[in-house]
Image 1 (cartoon, rainbow, N blue to C red):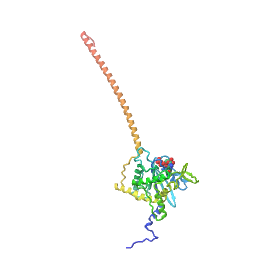
Image 2: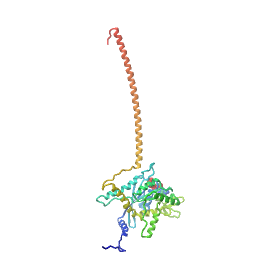
Image 3: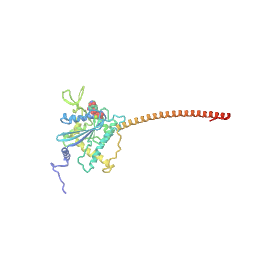
Image 4: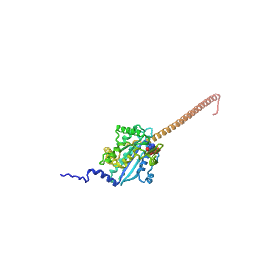
Length: 386
Ligand SMILES: Nc1nc2c(ncn2[C@@H]2O[C@H](COP(=O)(O)OP(=O)(O)OP(=O)(O)O)[C@@H](O)[C@H]2O)c(=O)[nH]1
Ligand SMILES: [Mg+2]
C-alpha cells in the first residue's frame, strides 16, 4: 500500500480555506447582517453609516440606501452590492424595531427570533426540494446586539435576549453611542459587559485569531480584544479642529469621529464584518447554527413535514388585543346598563298599568255591586224593564 505524499508546492489540505475563499469570490457571496436592541440606540443610524462608509462613490449610492431616521416599526430589509478587490458581496442588512418600549417587555424580541428561525426553516425546505438551484438564502450571518451605554452593566432583559440569540446566530454585542461615555467609563463598561456575558454563559461570536501570517494574527487579536465593540454612528461629514473633514458627531468640545480608532471601534467592527471575518461568519452560520436548527427540527419532524409552530404572541398585537378587549368590555357594560334601565322602565310601566288595571277592576266591581243593589231594589218594588 502506498501513501500519497503531497509535495511542498502541491495542493494540500492546508489550502482548503483559501480554495473556499476563491470559490466564493468567483461566485460572489451573500452576506446578511442583522441589528437589534432597545429602541433609540442608533441601529438605523449605524446601517446608514455602514453603507456610507462601505459603498464607494457613495454620492450616488448613499441616498439610495439611506433610511429614514424615524422609529423603526417593522423588520426592514436593505440590500447593497459591495465590491472589494475583485470580491463581490451582496450585502443584506436587516433593521429591526427596537424593543423595550412596552410596560411588559418580556417577549418583545419574539419577532426577531422568529425571523432568524424562519430563514433557517425556509432554507431547509428549499434544500429538501428536488431542484436546489437558485435558493433564496437570507440566513442571518451576524447579529449585532446594541447595548445601552449606561456605564453599569447588562440589564436582565439584555441577558435574556442575548441568550436566546446566541443559540441561533453569530452574536456580536456592541456598545451603542460610545461618544456618550468618557474613555475611562467606556473601558470599565466594556469590562463589566464582558464579565456579565461570561457569568451568564452567553456564547458570543469569537473570531479565529491564529493565522499563518503573523501580521494577520496580530490584526485578528486586536479585533478580538476590542469586544464588545464601541460604536459611534453618523452620516454627517463634520470638520475637526485640525481641519480634517470626517464622518462624526459634532460637540462643543470637538468631534467624535466614526472612523477614528481612538474614539470608537467602528473600523474594527466593519473590518470584522466586511473584510476579515465575513467568510468565517458565513461558514459558522452554515456549520454550527443552521446545522443545529436542522438537527433540532429533524429530531421532531419527519422529512418534508411542515413545522408545527405554536406562535408566541407578538407584544404589539397583545397590547392591541388588550385595548380591543377593554373597549369591548366597556361597550358591553354600557349596553348592559342601558338594557337594565330600559328593563327598569318596563317594570315601572308594567306596575303602573297593573295598578291602573286593579283600580279599574275595583271600579267595575263597585259598579257591579251597585247594579246588583239596584236590581234588588227594583225586584222588591215591582216590575222593571231591563
Ligand atoms: N450620541 C449619539 N447619538 C446617536 C448615535 N447614533 C444614533 N444617534 C442618535 O440617536 C437617535 C436614534 O437613532 P436611530 O438610529 O433612529 O435609533 P434606532 O436604534 O434605529 O431606534 P428604533 O428604530 O426606535 O429602534 C437619533 O437622533 C440619532 O441621531 C451615536 O453613535 N451617538
Ligand atoms: Mg431604527
